[in-house]
Amino acid sequence: MDIKGMLSLYEASHLAFQGETVLDEARAFASTHLMDIKENIDPILHKKVEHALDMPLHWRLEKLEARWYMDIYMREEGMNSSLLELAMLHFNIVQTTFQTNLKSLSRWWKDLGLGEQLSFTRDRLVECFFWAATMTPEP
Image 1 (cartoon, rainbow, N blue to C red):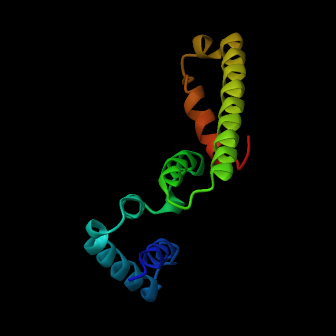
Image 2: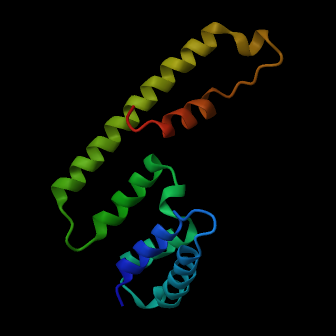
């Protein structure tokens, strides 16, 4: 059985529009077979299957998933170390950029003083920054 193909079918079936019974049936078929065979496969593929069955890839936050995939890719047999090093370097640069931006934004918010002056405002800067940052493809 082509487990990677079954995993791709399962992920693709979550992109169905309401009323697309063929993709609903494909999701049921793929999830049933993936649950049945996940114990008897390669450990790395097992982790990918469990991860997909937990929540489909397109429902997850890209930036948080990148780190998970780097950890999995690191353990794969045919891993390209140059590609992995480049991905980790990019991830760290993006993370540092976000941390610098958040530090600057926090300083601005504190200097502005609206959190203390206005009783009806909520001090949720980090939460708002996080959600804005996850929606942009690059910092």
